[in-house]
Image (tube, rainbow, N blue to C red):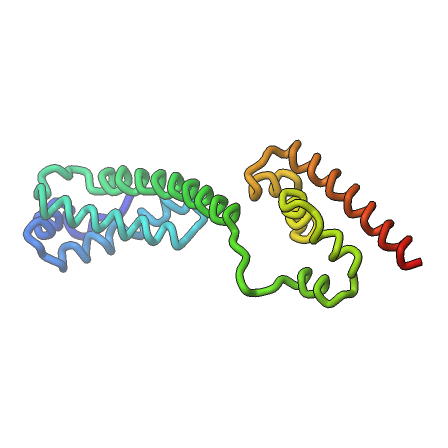
Length: 190
């Protein structure tokens, strides 16, 4: 529990009147304690800093709108607000992860050519390049994801938005077609 160098109720009354100095004193008195409590539940210091800032903004707003009378226990009030913000941040982190996954799945090829494509285009793997070009797009996408990008079956399934079993089946079909094409090219060359 934070130390009480100035009486919290007096500081809250000052904040309700718009006194920035009272707000600053409340912040100095309670912020280190709030940070320490949040650190027990969150390892992301930037997120903790954001939550502390949002919590004190909420305190200022609450005092301006409702007055300080609704806050009897400053530490308890701050903790309730901060813990809710922490839960919200965790939820939005999940939403952020899902958004990033969707964006990766909708990956649009840029004008930058990948290292693998540069090697294939250089002609060092002519028959493989020809074989890849002849693969249907759905098989080529699986080879790109699993072989060239090095993704696991599960990761490739997520990126391509298809079941893992479909990734495995398409990978087997792609390998068979590539093998047949490369062998046919060798026979023609030899």
